[in-house]
Image (cartoon, rainbow, N blue to C red; front, top):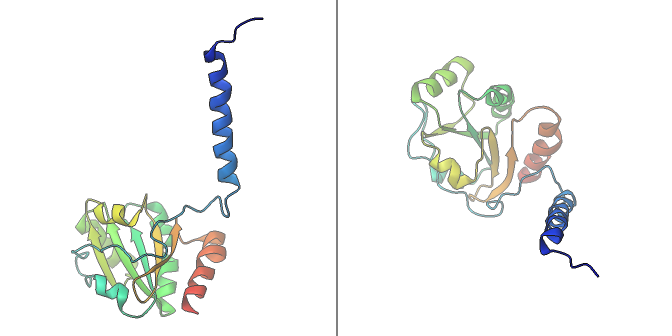
Length: 178
């Protein structure tokens, strides 16, 4: 009988492990949604600086008793520009929308809000992206729904546009308001 080298067994074992991980990922409740370790926890701190010409967002703003939508954005981000009309619409409907600008320049961020209308009741400015890391933000835009006591209720990755916005974000916002 021929002896089988351990190196011959290793590739099928590695393949089986990767296949198992892929299968587990596909069988999650919602494979398109990234889990957030902050859902159900208190919101992390916000930046200590505001975008020039805007009101400063504070940690107390997230614990003021009202639902707050916290949107991470940048002036250089095309998807952020695409979602901007929906942020303005949410503001017009009476929602508290806060904006945290990150990895941007003050002048560009301020100019953007001046030129395209500011949907935010208050802002934070996160030049180095350190606060975004604390929130678990991977890339702009990302939006969080925060309860009136500062508890993160929901995380939405990507722009607030299209069917994802209508079928995923808006129902979660309605659920938070109930």
